[in-house]
Image (tube, rainbow, N blue to C red):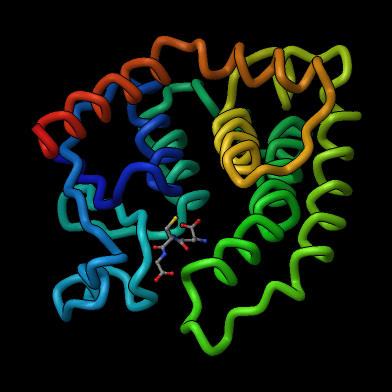
Length: 212
Ligand SMILES: N[C@@H](CCC(=O)N[C@@H](CS)C(=O)NCC(=O)O)C(=O)O
């Protein structure tokens, strides 16, 4: 049985979206890092970094959202969500997946760390102009690439679309400027997918149960 360990809304949504796209049965164990759940001995045995998401597939444990997404697509995708190994398309897929996690996401994570994740004495607002500068550059690179394209890679939906749409949604929440209309259309298309809606619905139900 597959178990996703994470929290809504965090990078664990990327993994949950993959699970929903592949229509795999899974359970979702919620852990709240703000409440210290990810610092317990039991959690640190799974991920010594004390971070979510973590995936358990039987005895097998994996962390890092991009690694988990690739593992799931390779293992259970049956040709869906990831181009075949050894093709140029797979190379392009890796290019954008790594670009997303190292260039597009990095300034957002820097901003978040200086807002809440770092110890208070290490936080500074002085990083914010660099955050904006770096995000704008990465956003523009992706906006240029998306011009005239339906998906980030090739002619079909892949994990890269999940990562880019998730990260852009994060940027939106963080108040970044994202002026390109075709990027907004792309995001609306990605978030209009049945798998995304199923994930959002599950979260709404779980959230209302938790607060109700
Ligand atoms: N590169 C990791 C980043 C994981 C990460 O930083 N997760 C955040 C939540 S989105 C977290 O667990 N933060 C808790 C902390 O930093 O203590 C991935 O993509 O999985």
